Amino acid sequence: MATLDATITALKKGVTEMTVKAAVTNIEGWQKKLDAEEETPLKTISKELDQLKELLQEEKPDGKAIGKLMVKLGHQTAKAAGGADKEGDKVKEMGELLAKAGESLA
Image 1: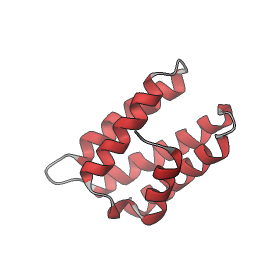
Image 2: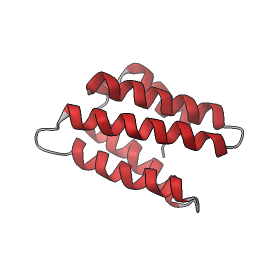
Image 3: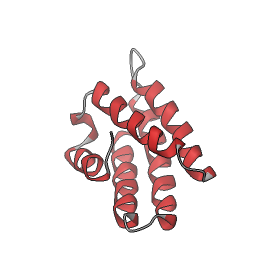
């Protein structure tokens, strides 16, 4: 199951260091958590994560498209952190790292 600390650590190491399988497993863990929530913005993020999974699993992944989507997801995640509880700072950090990683690909 995806955790904030594990995802933050992975993003700090660099997304190109993750295998596609590890990235997809992490994404699916986040989707499971997000789908359990009732907030519409979180469900929107989950749908965007579906698109990211699809892009990652293509025969020839398009780094630029992946990067653009990661930037979008990063901004959405950081914005959603405003409504988060005690973990809000970590959620915001994760969103910022996701956007930064996406910028490096796009």
